[in-house]
Structure formats: C-alpha cells, structure tokens
Length: 95
Image (tube, rainbow, N blue to C red; front, side, top):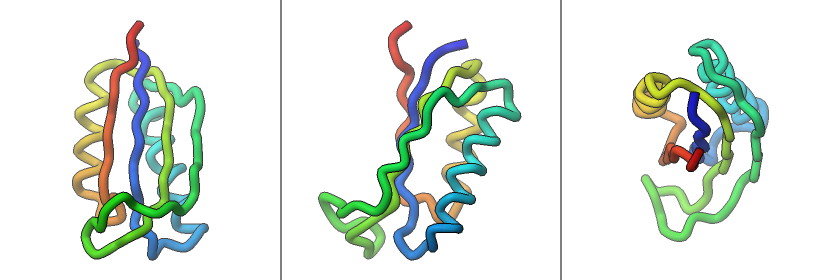
C-alpha cells in the first residue's frame, strides 16, 4: 500500500448536501477497493484562478489515503465519468 492524496474540484452549482454526498461517495470508493482514507480536508467553495467550463468557483476537497496502486486507475475512471467533477489530481506521496 502506498500513500496518496487527491484533490478534486466539484461543480459550484451543487448544494451543500450534494457536495457532501459526492465527498462521501469518493471516500467509500477508496475504502471499498481496499484503501483507507486517513484525512479529508473540505475547503469549501473557493474562487478559481481562471474560468473552467464557465465556472469561476468550485467546491475544493482533498482526500489523503493509503491504497494499492490499482485503485488509482479506478478512482481516475470514476472522476472522468462523474459530471460534477471539474478537475482532479492524484499524487503519490513519498514513502
């Protein structure tokens, strides 16, 4: 298992309840595929540095987690097919 962190930006039109549901959905995805979320940093709605898909704001969230390397591909796949995700980044931390 390796240590990772992922930051994802969600569409600002989501309500707070929908935002929380998405954050929990990604955390459950990590846990159901053999990973462990060690920390979640909910940064809330923030202004973007530049406009993305017509939006100037987004919901920012960071998950810190430990997982096998095959989980990263699945997480990226789910990010790509989820309409609410504007941008994402997954980084492996040094062991």
